[in-house]
Image 1 (tube, rainbow, N blue to C red):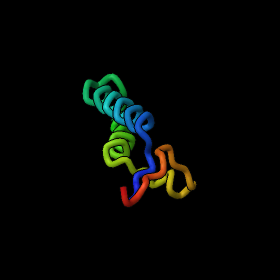
Image 2: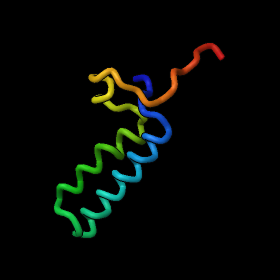
Image 3: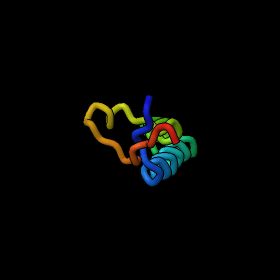
Image 4: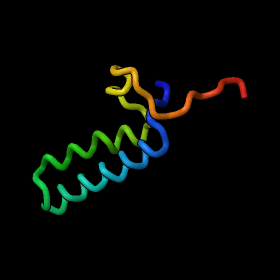
Length: 66
């Protein structure tokens, strides 16, 4: 898997995912807050399957051989 999630996108995914999970654990939101696992996981691994399907990428193209 090549990374297709850039740094800003990655940070936002991790923050939003963690906030949704924290709200679900604290009881503030319904259990749907656990959907935060998706952006958290994609932010941590820097790969988003939806981006791949849509042909999107927010990270710069990696240079090989350097």
